[in-house]
Length: 356
Image (cartoon, rainbow, N blue to C red; front, side, top):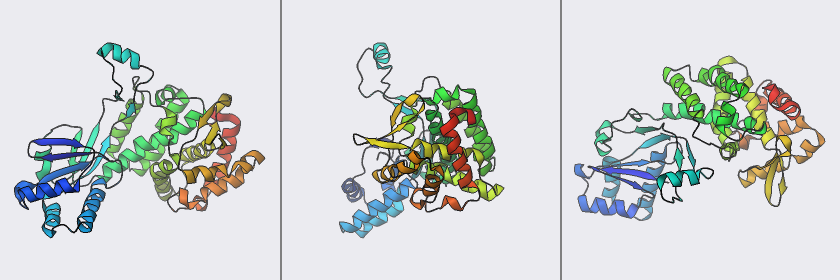
């Protein structure tokens, strides 16, 4: 986990928050106004500030530190909930020689990121002076949740719902499927007809969705679909399932495009163990490694009998009814969803891209 810490005119980027150092600051300055401190965790989890504060207070209790230290944390230290949004594709392995030649030096830590960025901070305005940067991409708010919901459902939701079917169809990076007329239309329809519907076509959400399409078309980013596929079980449950459930509440029917994405997710996890790795296969018999938790991999590996015997209906039921995958929901209870997912899996096995 990493953090930004602000106090006075000083800002630091830290890899850890040390209770002992916080305690030393408290003892040195005391429990008073000038000891105010702003801490902004950057971990990509819900309520990251609340969770960090909970951990800090837990260790204060375990170490039996002063009660006044707790008062200082509660009254003068703002541990903000935050949201960060920027596509970072990492080390440019395919273009590193070109970049190093241009720079004139070797850089093993080089990383590539898009120009767009968003930093949302949930904190009282009085703490803005500790992070004195005025920028349209930095938002101070009293509630980060609407921004989180928008980002997770639109940006992350499209990544997870489209990357798996696109990979199965032979694409390797986001830019590739955005150049394809079928998949580009799929992305636009998914946003317009299903995701934005559950966000009530909010103006900010529409603008964000339009920006996401532009960001996906960035020719300088190589965002590999297999990297996006990491831990897709938890990602689909967090990024796509809430949209499915909200869509059903609004329309009283399942969303057809996300239903296809769900079928693609299931087909992507069709694999077998090879030398300890769980290996899937896409078009042209090309192999790929399926990366997820041990528990999830073991569950999907037990479905090989159904795959090999052609009993798609049975494996569809087993997957959709497994509550551990779906935040305690049994998806077979959603009217017609199981039947539609089953039919889509069968079509994917037979036709691939032509059915989208």
